Length: 114
Length: 113
Image (cartoon, rainbow over all chains, first blue to last red; front, side):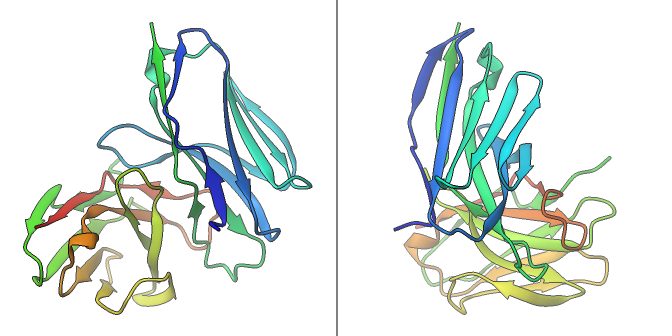
């Protein structure tokens, strides 16, 4: 079993829809949670990050972490064609000794059509 | 403000050959990590370099080695290439142990034939 599970999609939605992307994980030591966006032929770019449980909002994006369920989500409101990309969740365990390697999910491909 | 620069962009190699990939970190960053991203998969951690030393390594064989230079730039070397080494190789730089401060390059697409 992988440490981080993410549905690869693809997910196709109409412009303006609310998108929900999710990851589950097995390692209870994960404490830092991130969402990266990766456009085709580009490297991942950090979109949102949260520490421990809770919600965080930034414009059209909301990140949620439920540590009791080992489940994280990213919501995109009023989705735009420019949001079409692969979304990767990533995590870092607590007490990683300062060597913060990212553990990624497989990524979900999202297509927003006009 | 230059981000992370990787070279070359694309590379085709034959099985058994050796390859060297290069990375220049973002200005101000001193730590370089390398990731392998197979098609349709998330990036997998290879290793991390800080102060010219490998300080953490993922589950990759010794065929994968690296180096960090005094100017913080880094190289990834892969020996005895296998078809399964075909992937996008990503370099990420950061400042020290920052959890959120990773900046990724656009990667080197390696194809082994």
